[in-house]
Amino acid sequence: MAWYAYCLAEQQAFLPGSRSRRPTLIEDLRGISQQEVYAYPSGDFVVIVSEAAGGEFDQQAVLQHARVVSECFRATTVLPFRFGTVFHDDEELRRAVRANRKAFTATVERLRGKSEMHLKLLVRDGVVTAIAPESGTVRATAGGEYLVQLKQRAARDRERQSRARTLSVQVQRLFNPLEADVTCKKVDSGRIMIDIAHLIPSHGVEKYQNRYNIAARQLKGCELMVSGPWPPYHFMPGKLRTVS
Image (cartoon, rainbow, N blue to C red; front, top):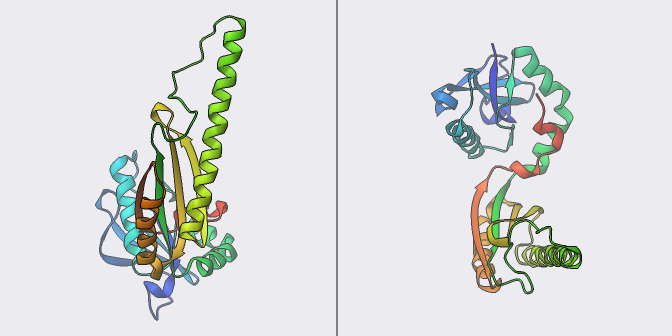
């Protein structure tokens, strides 16, 4: 039987006192396409799975996958699998857990009692000095004007990168997370979107939200958006993301 995998967790959280090798139904939890959800034991771990229904995944399936992971995260530390992870039979599932057991164990220990918070910073138009809105592609005009346009675009890009680095440092000082994952990209009208994932102690969510309120006042010219707590999607070793 093929299994669709949501996440991995310690067995004791779902099968206390049991060393069964058979999947155990998790009551009152439904997965993709309303499939029943099971805790599939493998050593000290369980893989949270549903029977793989086949067919194409859609946006609704993405949300259902995330909901299962979040519900399990309420009970224990989880290691999320990438959306769309399917094990084609029982042996493939067990083999994947055995092959990564050392990394799974170390990661669970590192992430136990921790949560992920998401922070998005949108730098509004006119805030970053010397940066004009993008005007599309550079026109292939003659000689000197073309070179001037290239230099101006390069200067705008350097200014964006500098501004993004400065804001990232400010955010790190304000929130003081255990770990951070930062990405930066241009969005409409040449604005900057800085997407930051922070790893924090789960008991520190209220403190984090208070610091967010302070940051919203201090970081002038930015729109801030916060969400969480979430399972630690951004703090998984790369090989765990492609375990299957």
